[in-house]
Length: 268
Image 1 (cartoon, rainbow, N blue to C red):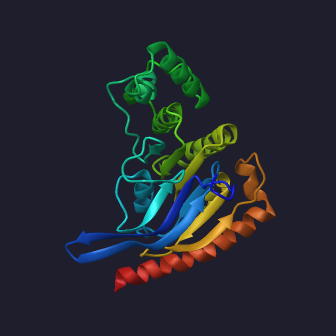
Image 2 (cartoon, rainbow, N blue to C red):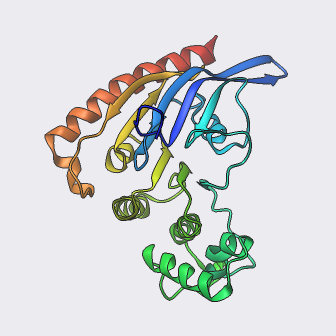
């Protein structure tokens, strides 16, 4: 807590801008963006392609630094890759020569955790994502959805303060994607990790989030910040509610306007 006793946000983004030097000149990906995230929030970020969503996630993870502004994790400046952030990408990034169990245990092994302890933790999270019985399987024997579940189990096993997910279900078929969305929603309900999740799907954003930020066309700023008050637990049936339709229309109106701006920028 700070001096006046208020809770320090899990993440603070303070006036950040990110500029990339390209052959065509400077490209301003993000400009003067500020927001904060409290512990246990599930924040989903949506916006037009090229608006800076992945760049923002990279900045929060510490993969790159903003040109101006500051990002704080639990009150401390993010100045490099932060082990308190668990990152899950669209590509599964599993070690093909390691079994499911070995992949999930990898971060714990790097922390020099005793073998028996990390084996117990690994099994717990493999079971949590519905892969009990596949502990000794190699990635080549798994479907895309199963591989992504291994990635989620590996991130959770490391017990990160924050989980960062960059369109993790985008490459999956619609049915597998929906199953994993509902599974992630259940995991969130159980563990209440702070999560930042990037997607192009408004339906996915509404199913998963406690809050949604819509980014503007480049340079990325916040166009709208919406609290998602749909009831829990959530599954596909929530899409039939009047409130769901209302929120989806509100989000789509903003996203559509920003997509049109993005197309105009590309045409210039």
